[in-house]
Image 1 (spheres, rainbow, N blue to C red):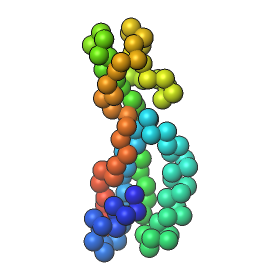
Image 2: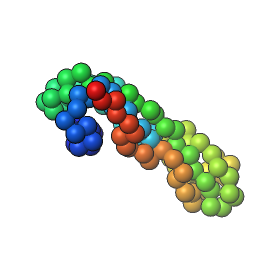
Image 3: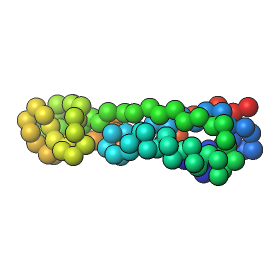
Image 4: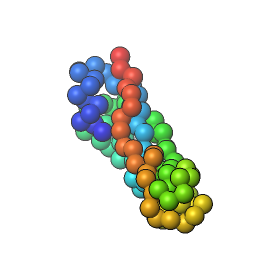
Length: 102
């Protein structure tokens, strides 16, 4: 995250970093927020706040065509027909979506 932020901030002061994290990435938001407080100090961005957008996982079943949200990242299957032949539509994201700089 810090590498992406520093490259795009281009020497400007970073106020806010927004990150989109999908449920399938198995990131614990509180842990990432804590780690960010350590990283921002070492990367000379001491005031940079981290805002997380947590995205639920969703799949499309190749068997029945149903689109469904996934409740557990541990079992990815169609809740309609119980097929495991599914396409992940969302929930695998991990990206910096925007920065506020000054």
